Amino acid sequence: MEVRESEVSSSRAVWFGPTGRPLFGWLHLPAQARAGVVLCRPVGFEALSSRRAYRSLAEQLACAGLVTLRFDYTGTGDSAGDTAEEVSIATWLSDITAAVDFVRQTGVSCVGLIGLRLGAMLAVKAATGSDIETLVLWDPCETGRGFLREQHLLAVAAGIAPERDPAAVEGVEVPALPLSEDLAAAIRALRLDDDLVGVSPKRLLVLTRADRALSASVQEKLATKNVEFGRATGQDRFIGVEPGAAVLPEQTLADIVSWQSRAFDGATAPMAGRAQPERSAKAIVARTADGRTIIERTVRIGAGNLFGIVTEPEDCETTRMPSVLFSNAGVLTHSGPARVWVEMARGWAALGVRALRVDLGGLGDSPTRPGRQSDQVYPVEAIEDLIDAARFVAPQDPAGVALVGLCSGGYHAIEGALVLDSRQAWVINPGLPLVPPELSEKGSTDPRRQTVRPLNSITRHLYADNLIVKLALATTPAAVWWVLYKLRLYPSSITGIEAVAQRGTEVLVACSEFEFSKFARRSGWTVRSLERSGTCHFEVVESMDHSLFNFTGRAALIKLFTAQVTEKLIPEFGRALDEEARKGGPTAG
Image 1 (cartoon, rainbow, N blue to C red):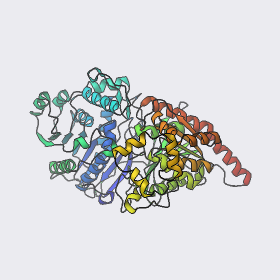
Image 2: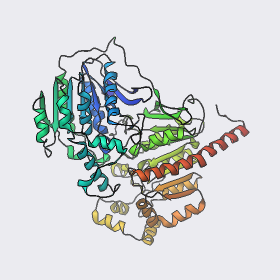
Image 3: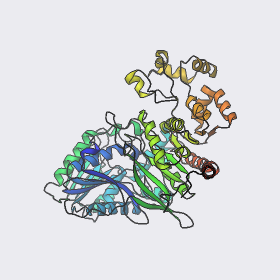
Image 4: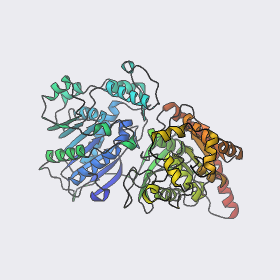
């Protein structure tokens, strides 16, 4: 069962941990607390797939009277740091210790750890020699080497890593997680059977998959513990799958909550009258080479109460500056695919740019609209959410906000740019053409969509989930596509981009080679026309995959967009201020 946010007493975004290396998380506080729990996340691709499940688990544990903290390790998600440079296993273990200490500041004395996959291995090491009361190992990895090998195979299957002999893979190609050689070596050296020797919680639960029995060495170590075993059901549809396809393992979540609640039966720690943990809505997340500080602050936006994080130079909260808005890519959160929105936002803040990373309604940590389900990628209200976010980050000039989006976020950026008369939109592998979800629900397209043509019955058949039709469309020559568009039998993948470019918005479309080939084959004549107009530019980014998980391609994209910041966004902002001053309008400051 997925618990709505309103059903828990409270949940709040928090920064905690070391001042020089703040950690970001969500603290779920029940009205009457008995004990506390820290959720130790998996890493990389598995962290993306499990995001929704961890939020649901935290909410259910809070409903059961347990203070619960879910958080990002150093160098992951919204926490400070960079896994490619300054992170070690010891760093992540100290993060867990800081999380436990933070939970204890709520007044609870008994705290447990719940770890999934590699997070279970980290939880075991963190619990060793500590006074952790309970420990849940959910489908634990047995060796770090095996984990890295599995991640490499995932990367190969997704086309973002070269195929090699799996037996020879040492493994640093972890989808969605860049690893330094030292961190990869440290992960490779992890062994669950070795670490279990020193751990002794009062109660221990191990959940295993039916198709993956524990090794004899791990079972031997567990035989000496006060351990209970259970089944991790639905793992094959939950872990190791594309995040948008991950199915919530509801039975496993219910089993964990039930066991954890029983384990703390009799524990009491009423919240009333107890000191709340020290927390702040903002934190210093980075420093520039010359010592200036970059801060991030959490915000709530508009009638939808959208959650977002603003990145900017310190002491500039009321200062006008060039602004960028990042939205969700599919069901991924505001941190972006492989954390790329975080990396861009913090790098550009050092150049004097304010960035807002926002979760649209029903995605990430923003509430779901009444009548909607969570993780819907293309609801029409998302366009309004994006507009609200642009007006929030730059209320005096929302048209000057550069809208950035990948896939579905690229579509929303195009729609938002039309409404806002945006001066710049940078879209990556945009999710075009779009068949809007309301078409199947209501039989018509919502009029708020400006870039989607109405589809007739023939067109709908072309979009049918039919393999033969899909193969035929994949081999259709350009001339036939032109006829289909002219007869309005099939929507053009370029119509939305053309519409916004014709309105005067400077559009940069960054594509993988595969994505651009679709544009070139289906709408090559329009692509060439737009390029000649000077208002739209298509850039093929070598080695870039659709979801930006390939590190080489992602680095090239960051370089491309950073050039847009320095050569387009910042100068354009300066010209806009000069024009305002000339007309006697608002000025910076």
